[in-house]
Length: 110
Image 1 (cartoon, helix red, strand yellow):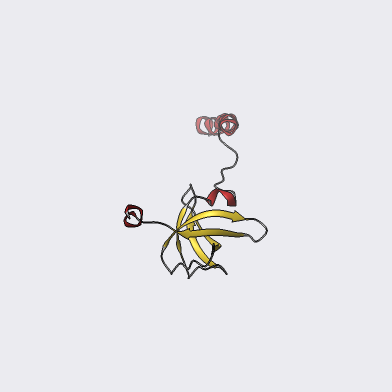
Image 2 (image 1 turned 90 degrees about the vertical axis):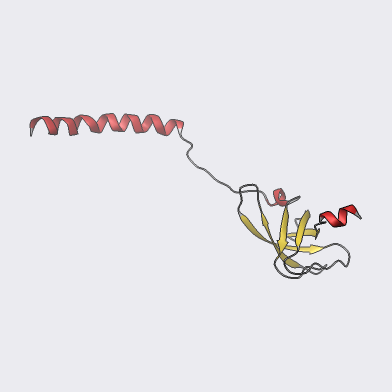
């Protein structure tokens, strides 16, 4: 009873003080939340057909989290399913993004 009991009783306060010291160094909360506007300029992929009336696309943020966004095109452009897109703008009142079809290398060279 003597030595092991004394070790257990002595270890508890030491553990407590070490934990308090470490808690002051460690961050209290970690988040990967992003502002909606931070998706502007990112590339993604259309989930359904996108036109000037609307559609959906998948876009990854800087942390790698996937966002399923509501979006539409400018003018009368139509983007087919599974095409690469670029997010151009966020329209806050409509809670919608303006997107366009991402140019590929052959489009740029022409």
